Image (cartoon, rainbow, N blue to C red):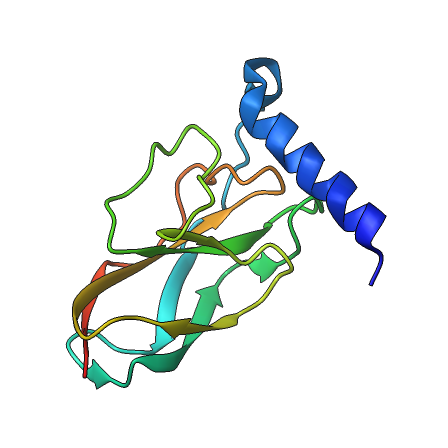
Length: 143
C-alpha cells in the first residue's frame, strides 16, 4: 500500500470539496434510459445486521472516480438520508458512501430497525450526471 499516495489523494479530495472554484465543473450527460438499481437487497425485505449490497447499472458503465470516460460513473449509496443537491459533489460520510474505486457491491452493517437505501451515480468529480442516474429509494428492515 502506498500511504503517501493515498494521503495525497485524500488531500486532493478535501481540497476539491473546500474550494468553490473547483466545484464549478461542467455537467456530465447521461445517456437515455440509464438507471441504477439494487440486485440485493430488494425493497421491503428483512436482512441481517451485516449484509452485502449488490448494485446494477443499465445503459452505462462503471469507472473509478477521477476517470473521465463518456457514459461512465461510480456509485454512491445513500443510507437513511434524502437526495442530495444534484448540482454539487456528493458528500462523503456515514450516510453517503462513495464507491469510488468502481465497486458494484459493498458490505454494510446497520443497527436493527428500518433503513432506507438509494443509489446515485456520479461522474469523475462526484457530481451526479444530468439527468441523474439513480435508483428508487427502498426500505429494508434489519433484524
